[in-house]
Image (cartoon, rainbow, N blue to C red; front, side, top):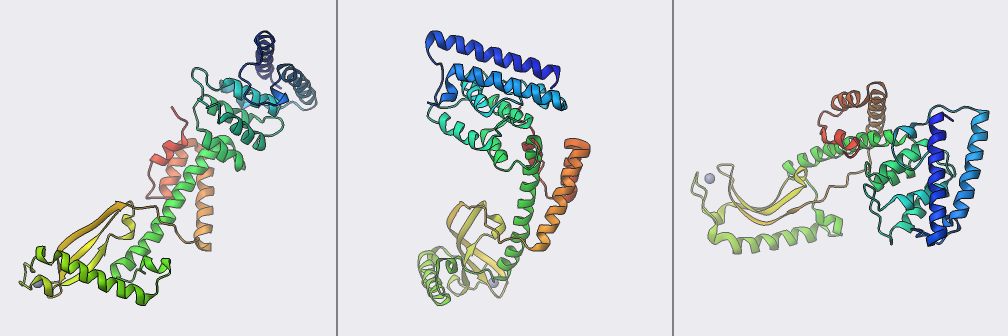
Length: 330
Ligand SMILES: [Zn+2]
């Protein structure tokens, strides 16, 4: 236990006692949970006992300086979980701190209760302070608490690398899909809806007839050879799978003599959803593990600069925006 931590703990204890005194005068302040932990006298008692336990532990094995001391905020390593939750509840909705709806707060405290250690670690204190002071988002903290195998700081590095990996897998998949699209061998999405190939063929034939009826009047003959519109090849067009963000669909005519497209009648345009890709192969998984480990090592060695270099080397299509997402909210 360093001198500094002792000081911040004393400050914490003073805060709690101040609040205890205030609530004796005015009744409990800002205690959204109907739990015994929120009774000021009990909090004070728990805080004292926690302090004794920390002191005993520190006497046995001196710990390295706590990281939490660098970060402003009410949470410090070594306090009990319920005290931490009490402090969290008291700190939200103040100037410069996280807004938390009274209706949402009890649920959030319960989520924290499920994931935090009985005695708050220095990393947990960092995370809670970062969220309370809006340097990080609540969603990010919860994601980290559910998968705490790396430090709070490295959680963002890991997420940035994972996003690159997900994009790479998607791009590889879409390259294959685009090839099929260009060859005309992309399976109809109607197959996923349980349609048989015969039903699909019949449906497409009927649709094509309807399209010709609707658009023939406006359709031009081939400007190269003059083939009339009704003798051109008519086909349904959907934009390639890699253009999933904005999907176009419509009817096109093509002259087979001149090998050129003549008309395009657009019937639909819309935002697409990110495609779901099939499970990665063993080869893709082992390459991903290697690349992710190398990026994390580069980060350990040289910080964000090293991470950026390694990401760009291993994920050449990488967008630098990802790296910015690893930085705290300014
Ligand atoms: Zn032609």
